[in-house]
Amino acid sequence: MNTKTKMTDLRSRFGFHCTPFTREISVTDRMQLPIFDEALEAIANSIEQRMSAVLIAPAGTGKTSLLRALKERLPEARYRVHYVKVTDLSKRDMCREISFAAGASPAGSFPMLVRRLQERFQSMNDTDGLRPVLILDDAHDLRVHVLSLLRIITNFDMDSRLVLSVVLAGQPPLARTLRLDALEDVARRVAHYATLRPLSRKETTDYVQHRVTVAGASQTPFDEKSLEAIYEIGRGNLRATDHLGLKALEVAHNQDADITNSNHVVAARKLLWP
Image 1: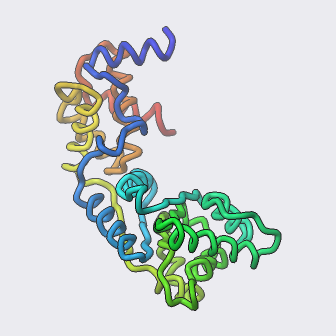
Image 2 (image 1 turned 90 degrees about the vertical axis):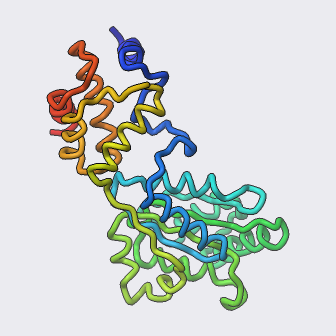
Image 3 (image 1 turned 60 degrees about the horizontal axis):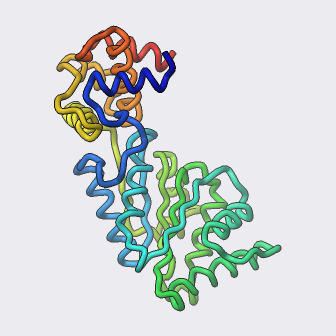
C-alpha cells in the first residue's frame, strides 16, 4: 500500500477531511492562545505607530505562524510587507537580499545599495502611500555588524522621520545579541520585545483537540493518557506536538486501533527521534 493510500485510509478511520498536524493550516484556523495573541497584538501596534519590534521565540513555539498572522493582519491597502529569511551573510549581501525583497534597484557599491534601498522605502511611503514593513526571520543568525545595518536603513532625514518598521524574529540568542554595547543604538529603535514559550499541559491538550477538530474529526481520537504522553515527550513544543500527534495516529492506524493510546505515542517517539 503506498503512502497516499495509507494516509487516505487513516483520514477515513479517524474522520478527518484533511491530514491533521501539518503546516498546511490557514491563519484563520489557528488556535486562539493568549500568549500568541498578546505578542501579535503588541507587534502590530508597534507597526501601526511606525515603530519596530522584536519577537523572541524558542524553536518550534510558533514564530513563523505568528509572522504569517501578522502579515495577514496588515492590510495591503496600507502596508507593504517584505519578508527575508536570514542566513549567515555579510552586510553587503544582506542588504542585497533586502533590496531584492523590496524591489529596489541594484547597485554596485554598498553605500549606493543602502541609498537605493532607503529611496525605495521612502517612495513607498511618500508616493505610493504605503507603509513599508521589513520582517527578518531567523535573525538570531545575523552577525553583530550586519544587525548594525538596521540603524542605517531606518535612518531617514537625519533620524527625524519614521518610515520603515522592522520586525526581527529569532530564537533566544537574538535577545542576548541585542544587549551588546555595539548594538545599543539598534536596540533603542525597538519599541517592543515580544516572546513566545512552549505550551502548558492544558494548552497542549487543547491544541491537540483543536488540530483534530480543524481537520474534521467529530471527536478526539486520543485517550487521556496519550494526551499526557504527548505533553511529557513534547514538553509543549508545537512542532514536536504536531510530529508526535500525526505519527501516533499512524501507529494506531497501522495497529488497527480506532483510539490512540500512550503506547502509540511512545512508539511514535521512537520512530521520530533517536
